[in-house]
Image 1 (tube, rainbow, N blue to C red):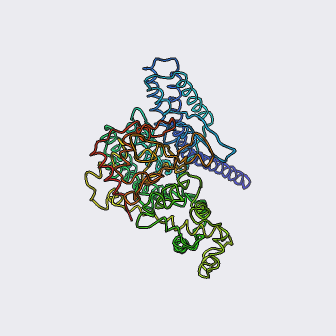
Image 2: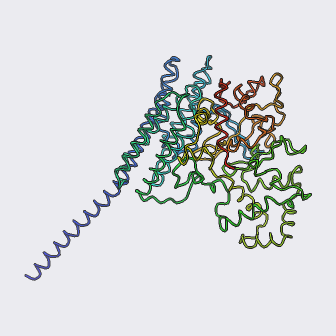
Image 3: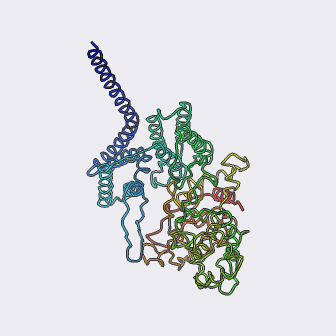
Amino acid sequence: MTHKIISQAKTYLCVCLLLLTLACNKKVENKYKSIDEPLKEVENLYNNYLTKTISSLDNFEGASVEKQKEHYALARKNFKLLEPILAYSDKGNYKSLNAPNIAIIKEEDINDIKVSKPIGFQVIEENLYEEHIDTLVLNHTVRVTKNRLKLIKKNFLLNLKNYHLIWLLRDQITRVATTGITGFDSPVLGESLQESSYTYQTVIDILKIYENNFKSKELLNQFVSLIEESQKALNHDFDTFDRYNFIKNHTNPQLEVLLKIQKDWEVTFPFELALSNNMNTLFSEETINKNYFSDYLSDTTNISEKVVFGKELFNDVSLSKNRNMACATCHVKELAFTDGRKTFDKNQKRNTPTVTYATYQKSFFTDARVGNLEGQVVGVVENHGEFNMTMDKVIERIMSNEKYKEKIKDLYSNKRVNFNIRHAIASYIRTLNTFNSKFDKNIRKEENTLTAQEKLGFNLFAGKAQCATCHFSPVFNGTVPPNYKDTELEFIGVPQTTDTINAKLSDDLGRYDVFKTPERKHFFKTPTVRNIALTAPYMHNGVYNTLEEVMDFYNKGGGVGLGIENEYQTLPFDNLELSTEEINAIIAFMKTLTDL
C-alpha cells in the first residue's frame, strides 16, 4: 500500500512538473511573442511602403509623361511614408535615394577620388519636370533608383530596441523641422509640407504598434494628438507657411513629450549620437551633442580647466614666429571672433571666418581640408602667412613657460604634448556657442520680443528664400541634420568684385586646391549665419560689406544671375524674386541670431 501511495505521489509530482514546465514555456513564448510582434509589425509596415514604392517605379518606363508623373507622385509618397524607418535603419542608402541633383564626390585622398552621378527621387523629379525631357537620362535614373530599392528590400534586416525607437522618433521630428519644411528635398514640386505630413503618419503608426510599451496611455494619446495637430498645420501653402510657430508650438512640444516617453519606457542609452538623448527643444545648447564632432570623445577629464588653459593659448602671441600674432589677433571676440577686414593682410586671400559655433562641423577651413579643430590648429601654426611655425617650435616655446608646463602636466595624464596643446585650444573654441540669441529665447518661449518683421524673416529664410536648404537650423550652417555626418560644400558663384555689369568669378578655386578634382572648382564650405551682423565683410573673399549686398547677390541667382556661367553652381534656384520688404525681413531675422 505504501509503495502504491509513493508511486501515485511520484506520478502526481511528474504531472505537476510537466504542467509547470509547459506553463513556463508558454510564458517564455508569450514573452518573446510580445517583444517580437511589434517589431514584426514595423517590418510589415516598412515592406509595405517599400513594395509600393518599387511597384510605382516599375510602371514608369514606357508610360506617357502624365502617367509617369502620377507614378512618380505615388512612389514619392510611399518613399516618404517609408522615410522614418529607412532613414534611421539604412542611413547611407536613404541619403543616396534622397540626394540633390549634384555630382557625388568622394575624396578620400589624392589617389582615391570617386565622382558619380546622383540617383534617387530629387534627380527623377528635376528630370521629369524639365521642359524638354531627356528620356534616356530619366529612364536610367528610374531604373537605378528602383534597383537600389530592390536591393534594400532583399537585404532588409531590422533590429529595434526601445532606445533605437526613441532615436528614430527624435530623428524624424528633427528632420521635419530642419529639412522637411524647408523644401530641401522637393526641388521642383515644392511638396515638402505634404510629404512631412506623410512621415508623421508613420510616426503615429509606430507609436501605436508599441502601445504596450506605455505605462501611461495618456502620454501616448498626448503625443499622437500633437502629431495630428502638426499634420493639420502642414496642410498649408508653402510660401506663406508659418515655420516659426510650427517649430515653437509643434516641434518643441513633441520633443518635450518624447523625453517623457523615454522616461515612461525607462529607456537607457548605450551612448549619445549627434542629437542629445535629453533634448527637449530644437534651439538650445543642449540640443546637439558637441562631443560628437570631436575625434577625442574620451578626453573630457578636467575639461573646464582645459578650456581656461585653451583660452590662454588662444590669446598668446608667443605661439607665432615673430611673437606678434595669436589666434585672437584674427578672431576678435567683439566681432564674433572675426577681424572686420576683407582679408587679414596682404599674405591672406580669404576672409577670416567666425569660430563661434565652429564645433558643429565635420570639416574645417573654408575649403574643408581638415577634419577636426585639433587639426585646424596645425594648419594655422604652419601657414606662412599666419604663425609661420612648426608644432615642434610651438611645443618648445610652451614648455619653456613654467606656468604652461605645469598646466599640461596637471591637466593631461599622457605625454602627447603636441596633441594636448591643440586639444586645449580646440576645447576652448568648442565653448563658443551659447544658443542664447534673441531668436533662441523667443522660439523657446522665454521671451516674446520678436517683431512681426523678424518672424517673417525667419519664415522666408526657411521657406521661399531657400536659405535653410543650405544653412540648416538650429546652427544655420552646412552640417546636415539630423545625423550631422556631413558638412556641405557649395559653389554659388561669388564674384571677384562688386561690379554687377562685368562680373568675374573669384579666382580662388577653393576645394579644388585640396585634391584637384575638376568638379570641385570654386566650392566652399557653407558657414553659419549666427552672429552674422558682427562678421562683415562677407563671402570667402570679403567681397560684400553689407547684408543688403549679400541678399542682392542671392536674389539675382548667385553667380549665374550676374552672368557668370558655370555648370556646377549648386544654388537650388535661378533667382528668388524677393521684394525689398522680404529682403529687409530676412536681414532683420539674421540680426536676431547675435548672441555675443
